Image (cartoon, rainbow, N blue to C red; front, side, top):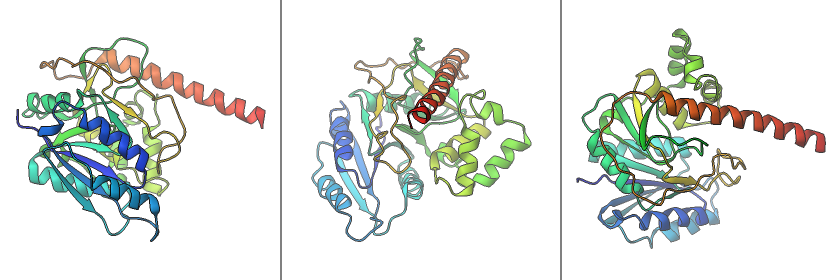
Length: 295
């Protein structure tokens, strides 16, 4: 198996970065994998946390190689991810991508690399994803969903070539084809609102544009039935993440057997995930009401 390079994007969260790297080091393929770390520049001249992160990553070991890129200026997460992924995927042909708040199972790298190998020549498959929502129902071992995701993912150059950074053009196509409901996961998650917010400058999400690009091209992403990733950044420490626990997950502790399956969206999995989104939307509204009453 020709292993994919791993890209890690870091900024100013020393503790989160350490948790992410230490978990990644425990992966069975870590010592055979090349690691590229992109460190975004500080917004202010004396950001001590950026300095601490850079001190830490300079001592990272346990991988086949470690290459570090320290940005002089602050690019912001979106530009940093877009530039870094583009550089490495054009150089190496495929990439596995992590951010500094994603703790992985020790089987994460194997799942991602096997997925990249199995579906390398399947044009309909745009990416492999490691995170899965904590739904109540048992999901298939692996399955496909339309679009992409952003919490521990992998793609090939042919996939990333479809990425369109222009939110206006993406939204125009969605509206022209009356795809808002489907785009919003059958109305269960506000992806259209997120894309509009990106266009209006309220967020600078690369992920909503990555999802939109794949969705409009009718491409599929492979997911595991049990999550291989836990996001520890939903604690108000990140730029785009608030303090939420709905997406908290237990990481899979066993290998997921990867065999080629029918390349079509799983109706069953989409139904269960839609129910998860709808339940959490209602729960979020309930929490807002309770907080309002308390105030």
